[in-house]
Length: 204
Image (cartoon, rainbow, N blue to C red; front, side):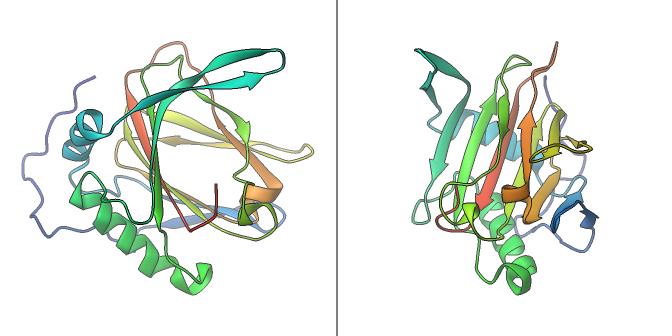
């Protein structure tokens, strides 16, 4: 799917604003924040990530066999340069906005490339590292075709979902990684979509 550029491109110094973020409380102290069309220059960032990120395919053990991970991935560590300056501005804006709650800055940037509707993420929580025992946050910027972020409580209960569109922001916070699970399900048909997940140090 091609994304038409905006008629008036944002200036080089444009930065995301956090005053339009809205919060949806979940259960057990979990919550999600959502901001539609949050990232300026989303078309340009999408194109840059598609060509500049050193995407790689991964394989994982599943029961008695090794299978392909159904998406391409790359992680930028805290000391790594991000592939587009708008992502630096986005991370800085999120760090400043959430610092009073989070107590630290977002440092790493995990990237996923969903090539079509067959690419997905299974149910999970980011519970490796501090996310297993402490409240934390994961901020997701979605680029490209819309895909659904599904969420369900650990142990059962009413589920919910958010459709993530081009340039949208979704932040999972509070106890979300410990008490809820999330997934990006397969769909019958979808164009390419990427996500950038900003995390604090030692949250995976």
